[in-house]
Image (cartoon, rainbow over all chains, first blue to last red; front, side, top):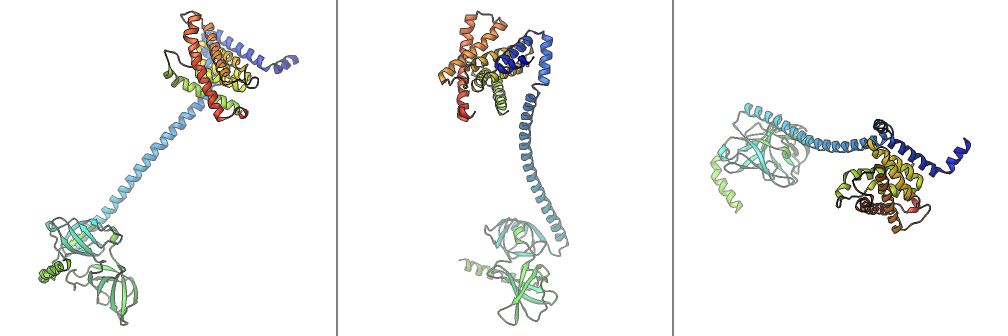
Length: 279
Length: 160
């Protein structure tokens, strides 16, 4: 037996060739039933790793495809989610708006902001309500939160609204606790500011409302909150910086307050003055 | 182990191509046998022992799909690859032309083994050799050379 092992080891190639050919011949000359049985066993045992590998490769390919499909689906769902959030946000805003309109003592014309200046700090917006909706020049524009500005130009279906943060816009405001009235105006650095007499007890966080004295805005509409109190140039006064009650960046649903300006009698004169200024 | 993985990869790749794309390369009904070409290349690179067992198991794998001829492809592939393995790189540093003729003859050996075993192609041996075996052998040898060339680009002989 020892010599046989030695012979096989020293003639690996010849022995392998002989064995492999012998097995092949035996398989080839066996009966069809036997061949099928052997093929089945080979398929299940010897070549199963190959089949498993092929199956795994197929699975991996399916996983890649599935991954791609899922990625597309996630993107679609993200888009859908964003759209739903937008709908929810605006529906909340609309519900608040409807309740505000119903409880208001003034006639309110609903509108939406459709265009705004293409600048970082825009000062005018265009709304989708115009003359045909009953909008007139100088009508105040508000949101549920407070005063936005006033209508300065009216077209048939749209109107141009000047925001209160425009430097040449002046709003008469009142501090309800003290009853003191001031003129709110946007400074050069776009902060809403108002001067009050120093002896008035005005604190940070207090709300300022329209006084109704300006002739444009009816009384009692929120304008903003006291943000900072500083020394004014005039030592008798304090310079109050006001944080607007309205977030101008997210304005969408608005109301035009259908009140005629108290300056109506001076309307023609004002219009002619405006034309002169424009020319 | 690394060598075996390379053989398995080459053979599986060859079988995949043979069963999918190669038939489209048919010219007048003759197309190359990429599995035979791959086995002969393995024999040339790795020697007779690799040729014998590689040919045996590849043949069994092919035959297990059509069990009526079980053992036939094994014998044919062993014969072809052992023939090429006689002139492997460890023994003879053959040039491209010699390699081409080795592959040509190896492919002829493969087909002749099958012809002798089956024995009935409805034609004479001479007609079969001239009309089928030689054209296929030329085609197969060209593919074999292409594999050798690609292998040489990936790994020079000394590192394989």
